[in-house]
Length: 154
Image 1 (cartoon, rainbow, N blue to C red):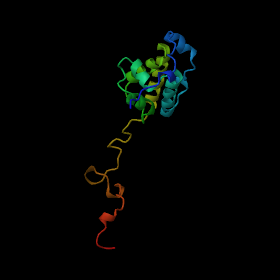
Image 2: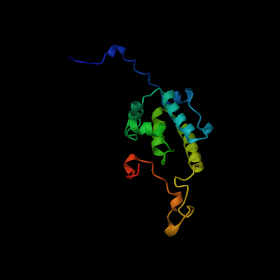
Image 3: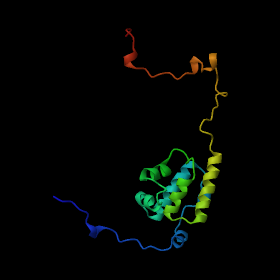
Image 4: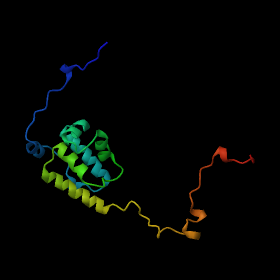
């Protein structure tokens, strides 16, 4: 038995026009209205939705600057803002944004990065110290009770 794709059911090829004409006509999310990292991720995902591209199409249009669909997924679903700008810029370019729009996104990214607390918000000097600079016993995290750790006293 041979399986194949029914080409009659495939959508017609998209009409290609100048990227600038499409970019200005589409209702792109406004990066100036983004206030949080979650809002940033939501708006990045909305950019791809407005462009009408799949993650695979974004990877192909990035001309090798984005390596895989998992990179696109991490970019729009990440736990923290991207540490560097080039992947986000490649994503936005691949989705069809103009240079001016990409610069607005970069401004939003820089603003959010400057407002974000550092990853290690507590420096070693700020931590309470006990004997030898270690955390006192009362502040150590207790392990959960396990049936395997019970002694002979039941």
